[in-house]
Amino acid sequence: MAKWVLDKVMEQGLHYIGASCDIIGVCKGQPGSYASAFNTNGGGGNQCMASRSTLASGDYALQDGDTSGRKITLSKRAGLTITNNGTADHIALGCSASSKLILITTCTQQVLTSGGTVDINEFDDEILDAA
Image 1 (cartoon, one colour):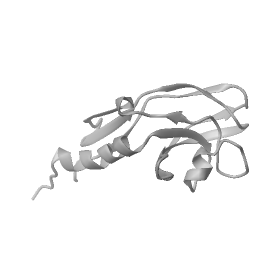
Image 2: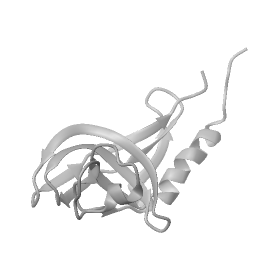
Image 3: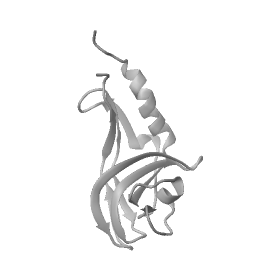
Image 4: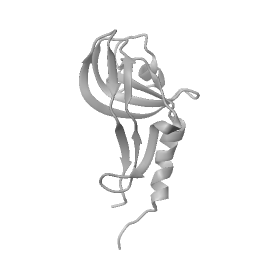
C-alpha cells in the first residue's frame, strides 16, 4: 500500500515559517540561540556576521517542491552591512516578537570583512512527499 499526504498538511509547516519569520541573519557557525543569530555586536563562537534584514509576507512563496512535496522560497536579500570579520556559513530565520530562532540552514562559505556588504541569494526549504 502506498503512502500519501495532502499538500495542505505540508504547507501548514511551511506557512508557519512564512507567517512567523520576520528577521534573517548571516552567521558564522550554527547559532544556538536567537541572540547569537541576530546580535550584531560580536563575540566569539557562533555569531551574527551582518546586519539583520526584516522580512514580510511578500518575501516568501509557497509552491511545488523541486523533487516532490511542497516548498517555501525566500527571495534574495541584497546589501546587508557586514558587522564582524569571519567566515559565514549559515543563514538563520527568526521571529523578533518572541525572540525565537525558527530555521537555520547552511550556505556557501564566504569570508566576510566588516564594513563591506553581503547578499543572501534566494533559497528554499522543502518538505518531500511521504515515502
